Length: 153
Image (cartoon, rainbow, N blue to C red; front, side):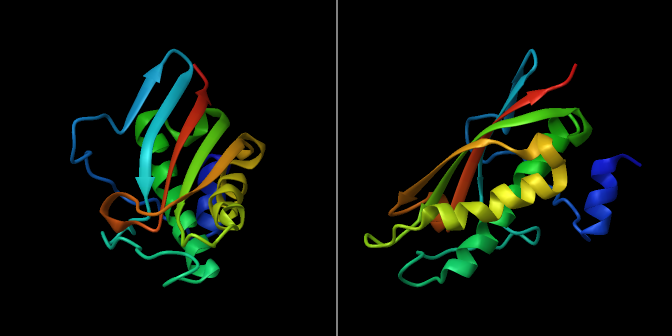
């Protein structure tokens, strides 16, 4: 069992099984030692999409939870593409938060994803990040993120 598998087990985290993308794109693309993972929305393992608008219909705590859900989906995509043990470094996350016009604390919501990646991947989970507001996200999702990953081998 790898360190990452041990961390997941200790945290009682089971990665979701994700289906293929519904549209004309790849879930991830690898080029040499780089992996780009397409947008992962706040869809739970049971298929429910966490929806709403932070600052309007949803509290910050719910937004943080939705960001964590996105991060779990990201980890699942990385695992199916290259295996989590082959992550050299999460380089960059872009995170969009469905937000009311006056909500300006997207970084706090995004921290849900950032903290989970660091907890699971250790120092390899540290990353640069952009947290942006959006008035609407695909399928009404509360949060969406994508990532650029450096991989081993």
